[in-house]
Length: 248
View 1: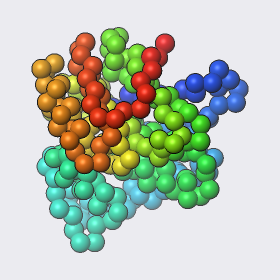
View 2: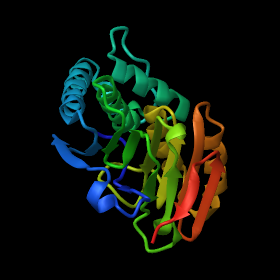
View 3: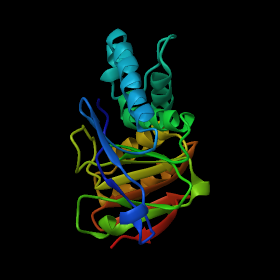
């Protein structure tokens, strides 16, 4: 539906028996969005994706600028929850509201799975992830290069969830990016905010020299746990990120 994002994330269980008894991920496609979902009440998650998408599209028909603006916007008084979440996140990050759409949809869908009785849920919406787990999980990072940024991951403990891990890139994906960042990944409780902040970070980085300023700006945003930025051979981190692990 828009925004700046990529598909930079895969999942692994740290247990060696993952192939026989680990998490099962199912693919779900709705219009141009491709989801990877791990949740027993799968139908509850997918139904919420379809429902939220329909509601948001109806809102954009009445407020077309919401779907095209690259700047924060005020919402109409009767805006749906998804649009309100996106607008709040965009206002904090200084980007257009659609930069938060994938994260917002992932969290709303994940919360629907939890409300339906799931103990665990992982919703990956094109690289923007919302998860709540009862066992450790490793989220591996993909920067689109063979450099060090493609060999890193986050080891996330159950007590750190629910959590959002959202990424943006100027090198991957089909959406517009104003920068040339290999990978910007933001961790936060609020998936819409993490998505919007990742977009802002990726927009800010056009050269290695931009990494420090982008890290400082994103880490200073209220509600952000931490940020990781990859540009060429530079990997910068700020804030409180999950434990970093090497991915073989």
